[in-house]
Length: 525
Ligand SMILES: Nc1nc2c(c(=O)[nH]1)N[C@H]1C(S)=C(S)[C@@H](COP(=O)(O)O)O[C@H]1N2
Ligand SMILES: [Mo]
Image (cartoon, rainbow, N blue to C red):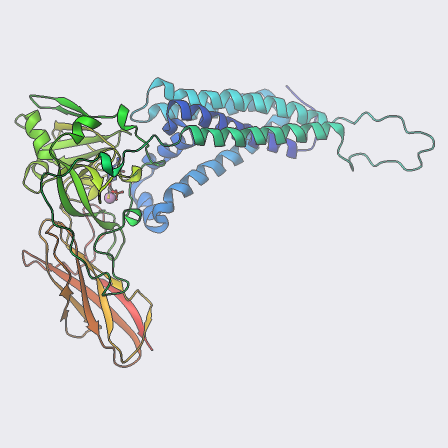
């Protein structure tokens, strides 16, 4: 349909953007009812995440940190708005083409939702609702926009009326109608988004009182160097500051009542456990430091907690793994997969299906209702969050998410040490004693020694903080009395309990973890 060209352009661009916004709101609202992960922006964003090449993803994680997710969602929203404003402009001359194009783009979002690993047919509903609402709104608003181009019908000017109004200087009734329609659409979209957000809100979480008691009695965690060395990482990471790394754009909110853990694959006795059944099994407590393979030397993707969980070994013994199995493929409720060498889950390191950290049920962002925690391995090969399934299989048969992207299949944590204080580029006072302190970790082996050097001076042996086992980090510090002002380089290195010094050579995190000594530059005044 060819339409009038006398109408201004901006109402069409606004119509397009509002059609997309209203459609997205409708999709979000429907998604709240069927599956929050199937909301069009989230489904498209998740598809973008999975399709992003590993180097770009690494860059995003290292430069944006935890902000990578909001940045990605905002980018998807901005691109959507720009594209739909463009479709709106197209609608000025080519109405049918624009409506079809908008419909097609929204249906692509439905396809993205259906292509998610755990999708079910209802996951297409949000995008279909978005398509219906978007196309209808575009049609109606463009109709109102067309009329803004038609000359306004005015009452005949009275002969007594001395001044003539300049056409268009005042909003014409048609323009007013368009603006009212646009404002109404924007308000309805905002309401829909807010309601969707509210309906999709979190299911009730259990409390510490619902947790079972561990069968072992772990002594209270010793007091660390926290009070003694200002600026050092606390011996136990507060749960709220525990690092978070995952591919989930929105934190999965699992309802424990609907959840179960399946143990299947090449086993004689597959079984499933509800949340209540899992909590009823014997639980142990373990102090474990977790590290991300993407952690750069000196980076923050390392944290420590006291975990409560069922030994994976016990679960696998009950399932009776058959011969030939070399990996356990774990799958999250979102379909994300991790593969772990079967050895690491059956030896005496006590890999856990954890249900709590630091005495509280797992927070949603750390994997509620249950997650894998495998001491000694980087998170991407042993710490599946929102755990739904453990499958006994082989590396030849099944590949996990990061394996498909070229990362290692067996990745023990490499020995590392980090200077927490002073911070890089800090200025310290000459004359007084300056504590240099931080943490060192070598999960599975433990830390024997930490040494610090100023510039090219002698290595000073650091005092180690308390020991909470080989799977937990050690705090350390030395007292340094700077002499002379200027710029100094502080370097740390650790030795594990096998007597192995951490390698000096810097390597990239890809594909099995970074090596290298951490250095910071400080100024003495
Ligand atoms: N379901 C799921 N589990 C996951 C991941 C993920 O992307 N999805 N990332 C893994 C990685 S790479 C790490 S380092 C740890 C981080 O756990 P945290 O966020 O609790 O610190 O979770 C692991 N478990
Ligand atoms: Mo990770």
